[in-house]
Image 1 (cartoon, rainbow over the protein chains, first blue to last red):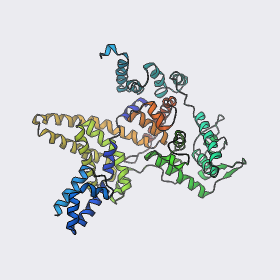
Image 2: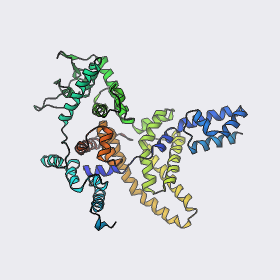
Image 3: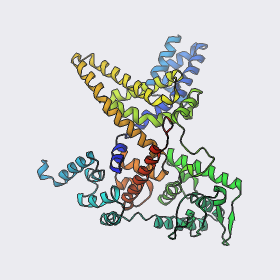
Image 4: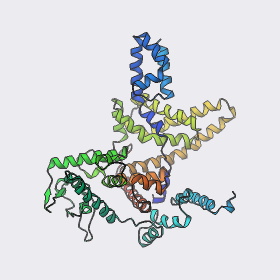
Amino acid sequence: MNEERIAELLAELPPGPEAWIRAAQELPRARREIERLVTLADTDAELRAALLADTTGALRGVGLEPAPRVVAALHARLRTGA
Amino acid sequence: MSKGSDPVGQSRLGARDRMARGDHAGVAVARGEVGDDEVRGRARCAGRGRGSRHRVGCREAGGVLGDVDAEHRRVGRRLRDRDRHVGGAPERVAEQVVARGSAIGRDRSGERLGRSAVGGSVLRTQEHRPARDRLRLRSRTGTAVPLARGAVRGIRDQRCRLLERARSQRACALEFPVGHDDPQSRRLCVTLSSIPAYSFPGHMAEAPTDAELVARCRVGDDAAWALLVERFARYVHAILARAYRLEAHVVEDTFQDVFARVYEQLPKLRDDAAFRPWLAQLTRRLAVDALRAGARERPDDGELIEYLDIAADDAIGELEQALTVRAALAELPAHCADVLDRFFARDESYATIGAALGIPAGTIASRISRCLAQLRKHLEGRSAAPAPSGWR
């Protein structure tokens, strides 16, 4: 493989948007936090109502970026558990 | 404006064509950063021979010749200034310099030197002695003092931390009290990070293989997951956006779907070393699903999806090779990996790269040339050695 071919191949893989990568990297923690919030909400109806009313704020509260996908996942879990 | 009335535009178009044919120097013209004539000179720095024509080409381009010694002298001056300025910690800096010089450099007589030569205190060392013997510190009185084993380990650990930070956060300047926004400090950092981690025997210097990462992810290691995502994000993104040509908003959703599925299905993966083909297959399946979901509104797209899926084979084959090159790139010294990534993958201009790395824009072409040659050699070494599966 000569240097020009190497250069060509390097150009084949530009970086993706950083926010997407960060969201994918946060996936395990996001899932854990969602599980924890849902477990807490299972025993506390008021908390569940509060979480449903302000899902974005709740996620921020536990240090997660409230990406639409994460918000939707928490919402769905809270509704399913209700 | 028509092509005929826009010579600069023509030049850029020509440069893009040349880039498509593998002439990477055409990129600078295409970007409008420099004139075509200037680039012809730079192209000789960045791409071709390394003999006298190469050197002339670099001079023609107005760039500073890639004189490693000169760069070392500059860093040496910087270090000496720092010694005077910081007062309390000259030894630490000197140790770092000696440590980073442990594996590189020869003087004109061919004798191996530590890179401590950059600080003005040349330490002649023997090539095959153990690392701890090679690491010697010249004190201010001029006496060469062998470093204790613990000090070597400290340097090694510090070096690896530095390298890791430089690679992942590009923030190694934080190691130094001169302020990380200072361009000289950044350059010092970049230069200090030029020793590959594998120069330090006995330390986990190489990047973990895919199989190792997968195994760590399985037991809930978040850091391993983050690294796995970082390693394959470009690959997944390229399959979706380039091989299957999905629309931007679909790419984003599918990208997240891919990693969500990977996270869920990783425990079911039978062979950890087969992660890469498994990921490619998963990504392809989700890309086709996304195309089919879009095709519900356009029933005529059925044939097009089949065509895209077949055509994606070639594109993915190319991306496989690109991934192998990236894996080799990750094993180069950080300053090389960084400059090549910025120029070729991120498509940054010389000016942008120079500002980000704190180096004169005129030296970038020669640095690219040197680093490309180094990458080629490294790739040759990798293909000659029996390769473990995965990233390595």
